[in-house]
Length: 356
Image (cartoon, rainbow, N blue to C red; front, side, top):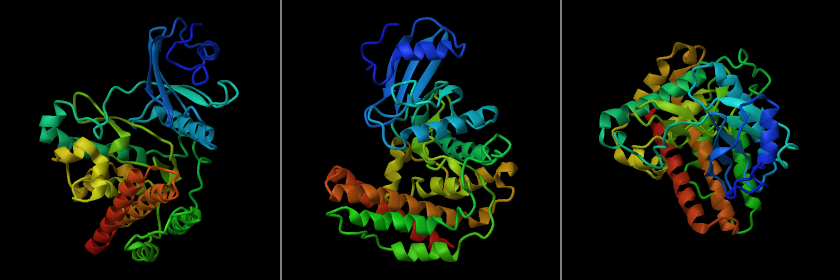
């Protein structure tokens, strides 16, 4: 089997891939139209065609991190479980959870997604049609409601996460994470106005009942691929943070990162956010609520709490890069930008609280 010159064998060994695919009765023949969709420090996506079928291979980055293979196993399991649902997500064709097959890397094959990331580029007809952009926003909410409607036990994910005490441990878990950044030399500590007030409000107003389900874990516009011909979500992508928890936190995450508030966090939405015409937060919640199976046993009256938690959690996650930048372990410009977004997220959290 000829190794494509532009693909390092250490990244994807086509002799290994050939034998592995053959062993799973997948169509044989030469590998055609091989091209990297991403690489470097990010997870690798490699598209190719074989035996009349198109594939995307996903594996960890060239330099695997400690938990990369476990994350890929989790992704593949969740996407496989979603295969029989109407959740817009890539469909797993076959997965290799054994890292000994491909030189230390877990990988899986999935269906390609024909779509675009609206936070990177906004093509026509979407760019010039505000009605379509408004519908794109609503579809972002209804795609998420499709995920919230899935019974995780029925699709074989009863043992996938640890939902017991999920909401109760959130504030303490992330305050501990923030405290841990103090070990980075040069980091002055969290200078985040409103931090303690938001944490206290979250603890005092936590919902007392909730229903577990599949969470994407990082649900915002940058992790959606839209149809090139209409407003529909072609696929929810990047499932690294998936777990069993409270799906309303995904909706809160969408609200926390939603453009239109005039603060730094709106920059996360890129060209789509800049183009405008998107629905407001209330319209997103209403669109999500339109699917009864997603809301059964879930209290949408508490959605502000989930949006505040999302601002709190994401702000602390981004502050980690600021801390590493202060210690010389990340670019200063990136750290400064993400710190400004963290401050914007906490301002948004306090605005959400004030709206209650």
